[in-house]
Image 1 (cartoon, rainbow, N blue to C red):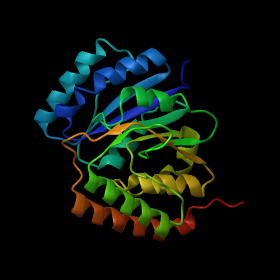
Image 2 (cartoon, rainbow, N blue to C red):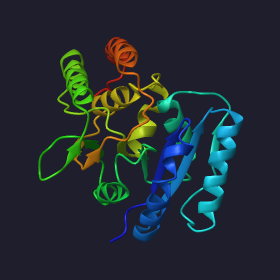
Image 3 (cartoon, rainbow, N blue to C red):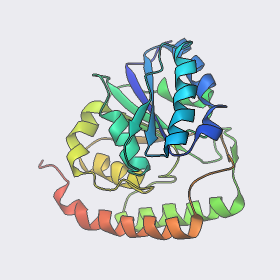
Length: 246
C-alpha cells in the first residue's frame, strides 16, 4: 500500500548527535511505502553543526531518493518556524507532515500514520496508552504534559489529549487556508496550528502511537512550560478573527 503524495519535514536544531540513529530508518521506510519526500530543516545552528548535518544528509541522499537536500535557515526561527519553512517547499504535495528528529516516534509509527491520510482530516499523533500502544515517558514530563494539555483544553475550549506530540499530518489545502494567520513559532506552535485548523472547519483525529523518551531534548520544562502557557493566552486573544463565515 502506498501513501498519498506527502511532504515530510524533520525540523532540527543541534540534532546531528541524535538524528543519525533515526533518519536512515526513516528514509528507508518512506522509500519503501512510496509517495513521500523527506526534507530536513536545519534551524539556524552554528556552522560546525550545519557541516555535520550536511554530511549526514548527503551520505544518505546517495542511498535514498526520497531525501531532499538539507534546507538551512540563516537564523533560529523556533520549531514551528522550521516546520513552516520546510512546508513552504512542498512542491505541490497533497499532504504536509512533520516528525521530530530524535526518533521518539519511530519510523514504523510514522509510516502507520501516514497511511491513514485521506480526505480532509488532519492526523495528530497522541501519547496515550490505549488501543495496545506503548508510551515510555519520564513521569515528570508526563505530568507536565497532562497539565499543559488540560490548560489548552480549558483555556481554548477544545477537546485534546496531547497537543505536543511530534508527529502531525495536515492536508495542504487546509493549511494554506490558515498559514497567514499563524504567528507562534516556538514550542506552542502545535496548539495554534490545531486551533486554526479546527476553527476553519478541518477535522483532526488524534491517533495513539508507540512513543519512547529520547535523552537530549531541547525543552526546558519550567521555563518553556511558562512561555508555552503565555502563548496559549495569545492564541485565545487572536481567535476572534479566525473563523470563516458560514
